[in-house]
Length: 324
Image (cartoon, rainbow, N blue to C red; front, side):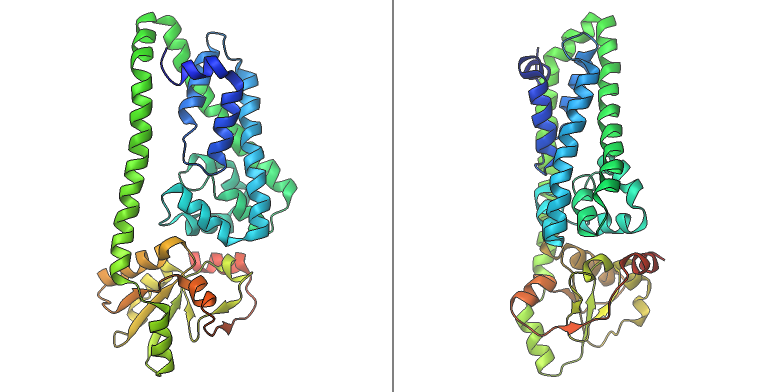
């Protein structure tokens, strides 16, 4: 019998626990094939459905709890790391923060079904002060829905295999090859998308030192802070003279953006992804002199360049206003 059923039969519940735990800790190794295989094997007896469900949910809750407390301690730096591990950093930080700002419990219950949200939701919950009790409640529901759906789908397929032995032979012959091809395709597609974004970004971004020289020389520069309101709570500072906009609001109000000076965008996302994406959007709207700041807010701060304090921010109210 081919992978992953052969490995499951050999190592059983230990493999199921370890695989789900590793994936939920942020390693891009999809657990879906293993959960489906476990569900299929439960139809024939080697794997107990209820025990497999409990073990997989426990693994997901353990990893999510770890990220919850790490997110509470280290904030957006954890989100940047997880986005890099996911190999798809372009919008994952902002998308998770936007969703969390609007509906915390719903996000945790369904995040694992949405690519890019499942790993990020627990540290975002910790970063933004959600109580551990409510977090564990909603995250437990989400983990149960995710594991139960995949195991049930595998169980349904396992019942089909029991009724049709020829289908079992076909699945055993080709499932391993299909799994390996799927994993390889998973990595290749995301690597390609990452390289495409970084290539466009490298040609457009502005060095912090160059922006500092422009400001020191008194050159008119329109600086835009694209950070999510939730990020302003632990870091209530901005670049000198910067205006705060969400990417959507900036694009909607593009007629107010001056065309006679450089437009500098910055964020705190990996590889300036949000700034680069917003820059490309504005360029399509006819704004030519727009560039993302290399390293964003974190690099500007690391270099010791001046920052302006901003008033306290209510992240939930501001997030709703930005969405509207």
